[in-house]
Image (cartoon, rainbow, N blue to C red; front, side):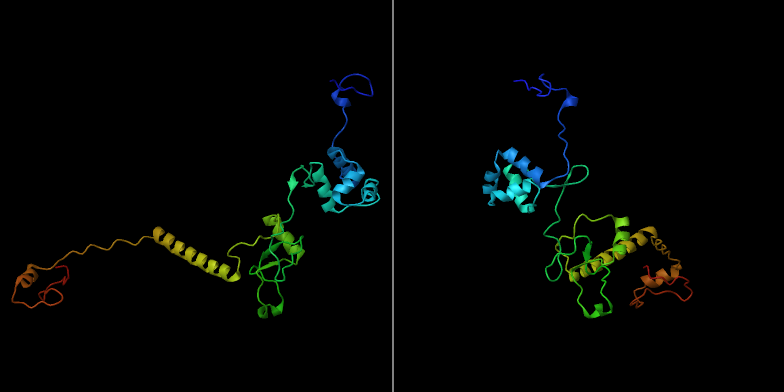
Length: 237
């Protein structure tokens, strides 16, 4: 069956006359109407499915009230769609992780700040020597944070706890890494500056020394015997 353009009475409209379906800013009213159209639900039916009164949906579509995100998300699921954060290129942006590092009281760190391990530039005041370093902390100074971001980029999220994050374990790992670097440096220096070969020993003993060595009447414990005029007096025999 051919679609009919109700404006002209002719068949399929020209491409440039097609309706503009580009997306605009999300509104509660527009989102609810889109969901109801996708799900084929009346206001009363949508309200019943969400467990709210029909007046809540009616007022939201009229722009007289907002709805909680959780309610909008449930409504979107009824229409087979979902709510999402998108960047300027239309790509999904994930929520901040609920499993990210927290402070000693189990509270989330401020979302706009960047977290780090507690042994990295511990920022407590003069009393820091009487306080235990935290496992995780953050930069309170925004200027310092911004300088770091300019050189290292902006982290997408806060730190995620991982095995080995305990400060004692990190300290042991740093010491082990330092020893490994030291051994590598020594090996590199040894490879770059090899020791010269030991000089070959050449015996210059006169024949009389050999006669002494062969003379069974001579007691020669320890070093081999040499005649008095021997210039070598080696121990190569």
